[in-house]
Image (cartoon, rainbow, N blue to C red; front, side):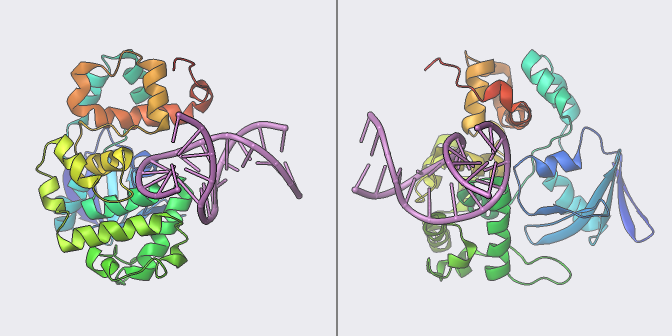
Length: 283
DNA sequence: TACCAGGGCCTTT
DNA sequence: AAAGGCCATGGT
């Protein structure tokens, strides 16, 4: 990949095995919006950019080369060898079909705190509503940024809030869970930095110590916020995939990357809902 | 063990 | 237009 500047835009050339739209629209992130000019705009970990894809070129504005190299390339997972990975996945007929159905989905590297909040909001909820709650959350408690949507609220700021303060979010019973997360993170009772270095089970135990974080949310935080590619969040769709397509369990050779495989399987299942919606009957 | 809580989007009727 | 399904966690 190489970066060149042209007409006030910054071009990242030589991008392959990547589909920007699918990656931003597959349910792992909630703060990207597709504009009428084809650009996606979003804020992540305090960085804003507008970006669109033209085949193997990503066209950026509102950012700079340094930020693309240091932040956006790792954020989009463009430093990983998806050519080899998807080739590996294709040795399994099910996964081969899922990857071919929607190629180019990459696992984003998101901020752990932002991911924790986002997936607390996501529980028992649907994507359009999650996006609305997070937008109101950032507008109300984040810091205004110049020419961009506001930053994500910090745990310290949030720890000062009460559930009444969060009422405008209309996040229902999740508000109290969010406050517990903010209090535990800002006080140091939960140290997100150290979670990144733990084995998966220890990390899970720490995260589920937050009220409102169960196994599913904890695994989402590990996969999306800590890039733990071996972790597979088991929501209803993945349970259906498991019972329908992998009754004997996920294939062992993919274990270290099963979280990435999950992205393709999840998307495939949701897009073929009719084939999966019925309970399989094997209790 | 089974059920309910907040709520809004989606699909089916 | 209206009704019912869906959803992850904690509490009863």
